Image (cartoon, rainbow, N blue to C red; front, side, top):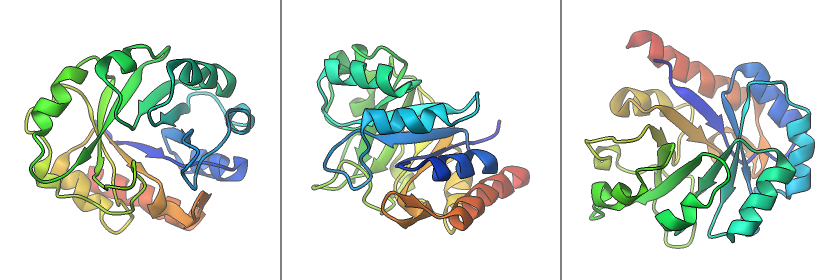
Length: 209
């Protein structure tokens, strides 16, 4: 099965259209105001309207109120909700779309026990732990810390670039990979050459396995 690819932190129509032309499967929009890649629901809606069909639109939220998530989903035209904060399973279950739960990986954390209550998620996303940030650190984590038992599809994030994504895919066999900073010219501004190389590396390792 091919590895799906999500480009997150999309803020411009041109970047979104370039990503789709290169063959990306999903685009992520950050609805977390402190993030340098944050976007408003109306701005995201403008980008979504410029996309062709069959591209998955994902909204990233951090500890947002359920009514805020629901309103943003409708305004922006999102397909998937990605919870990237400290949301409980009850919080996540209020989503009006299928949802992904992100977990910040660090040594000493029992990931299997942490993930277990979120069995209703469409997928589990694993990112690098940072005391100050909810993702977007630009650093990878020790992939050997991923749980051996995978009850849900695994999305790998955290510090991925064209230089390491092939190794990451080969070692972890994820359902999907998620990248933001690794394909940027500046925060929130994507680099077409980096996007192209990233996708090429994922496809290259697929052909070898």
